[in-house]
Image 1 (cartoon, helix red, strand yellow):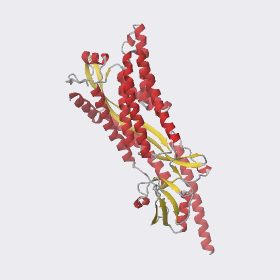
Image 2 (cartoon, rainbow, N blue to C red; image 1 turned 90 degrees about the horizontal axis):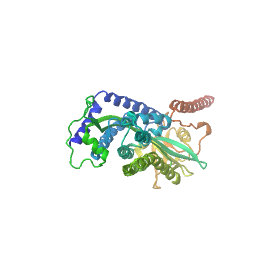
Image 3 (cartoon, one colour; image 1 turned 60 degrees about the vertical axis):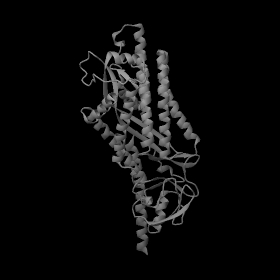
Length: 449
């Protein structure tokens, strides 16, 4: 039990003790600002938000702390240990650098492959030369590295299944002449991690070392000659640090909840397969090379399978002649009071068929904002909903239109939020101008009468 207690104690220390607590605060502020942009986009697109900024941020931090604790306990029980000069803590730095090349490269599958490849090169050089720098610098145990990455993919898969659908952004695309509705999912979680480091017994500079840990008889579960030699010849230190797990995906064939569960299962299975494949590293440098190759390519294969599955499935949110399908509903929408949900279909408004959200408001205006909505749920049952809509507000319901004018299309570039926001605001301003012109024209007609 002492191993687990030391692990949890170090995670707790990372949360409340400087300087790591300042890093947690900085990462939390970064997530808050990103989530604020998401909520702003939701309000512009939908007329209201689905989540709150605080909710999105707290779930990322709290679930990240829980996930980091679980992952660290699993690694501790398996007996995954790294040499103090292995450079395992550089994984986060490598992930961030790769993220600038492509956002999805923040995944450990890619930074781990880079670190492992460097380690194998240094190890190979050390076999033929006696250079002092090749004796241990950045030489990491590939088996333990792969298990480490596999465990945190299992944790990531669970986090995606639990939290991956929060903050999803509604999106549209055109396929076969039809407008398809869908969701763009993107989440990040901050994880405090505690890993075991083997510190040389004569290294007095390390003040976080745990000198005496009573190891249970069954430990470690994963036994290697290098790992056992580190346990015997070194002091076991538990080192805390932070990492960030990221997930992004898009779907037009599933609800956002269904997509999060599906993606989470794929990621979890990849983590399990990687842990099993890591055992090949026991067979020497050839086995290590094979594991390092599998790490990124297996991850790419997993993503490719998901993409193929998405292509084969039938689009879920497509409006037809019968009515407009509901893609999203804001948390404060009056529509929620009538048990209307996503996937239901708006058949008519005050007895009239409509082609878009703009037409809905035109019909409501003609009837002094008295609304009679005919709704067909996903089971095919029809019901009528009557209420009075508040003037100059939106329903808080996002409908998939049957068609979209080319000038109203706003391309979404995740790396340039300001340009997307200004494009949407410009589009909204045009609608406001049209509305003002309409009101002026009505007033002139009334005066003439």
